[in-house]
Length: 367
Ligand SMILES: O=c1[nH]cnc2c1ncn2[C@@H]1O[C@H](CO)[C@@H](O)[C@H]1O
Ligand SMILES: [Zn+2]
Image 1: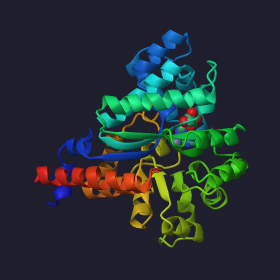
Image 2: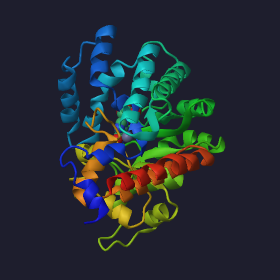
Image 3: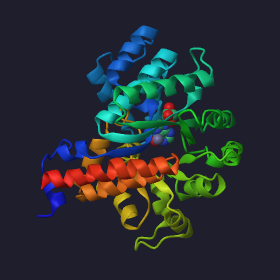
Image 4: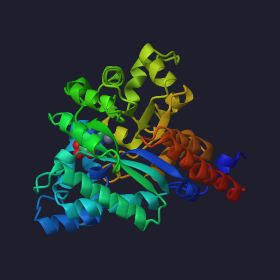
């Protein structure tokens, strides 16, 4: 029996023990999609938000997953009204950010980029700068509570349907050396092409800032093309519809070849894709085909609460669907840290001092 079969076989159903111990990196995780359900309930009571579908934390977690399981990105996104409603004060943002770092670290995540849209947190009177400071301070507090087991950076997201992306791009530049690693755009993809935010992307490029863009989730390869070639995205959020540019026999079109050959990392989020209809099942998810064709694939949660998932659960789904062993997750994790919006020496240090030794320990203790 192959070592990876041994490792994979020890806990069918729930994530195997080795999966929990494996070092992980997540590049695509929304702060406002990953709150603890009990925290939402507490904060809703404290701020007088009465529209939650239930005040029972366990039921609330199920409600999010079911409501998000709609087959449509637009309906998936409607659920964020309940999380954003309780994220309007300094204290709430600080707490949620600290808990986010703690929860990721408890799942074995050693490096995370957590994104959110500052413009969605102004209803309580905070300024954009105050929102960013509150989240950064919360992330630092979370890192401290884990004894430094995790490094977390923030990505600032501009919403595709609003017109504030230039402002958010400026905010990203202003906070770049204080915990903010890059910029993203998110929200409904249909009817909101990335090039509408070109001024924002040009501002970031001129300032030498990092850019990732949600693309190729609800719209096809043309959205990925625009994100990469017009807007200058260094990574793609989801990007799974790049398969539109790949023939059944695996022949790559020019866009797919460009993305693969330039090692533009795809931030793949399988469970979220199933919920929004971007993929049909774990077994039919294009992640495996993309990996075999040589794309730079990373594995991500997207929204831990809304999609009812964790990095360990995403790993387990990939084990079940494709029989992946630790060597594949090591590949995904190294790819993610290499594509991180961190200075190169820091990326190298995380790979050489944490990721490689962590996977080596995994195989030696399981023999
Ligand atoms: O997978 C996704 N595709 C597009 N937009 C998303 C996705 N997940 C979350 N958001 C959007 O990003 C905002 C900032 O974090 C969230 O409020 C949600 O509207
Ligand atoms: Zn996302």
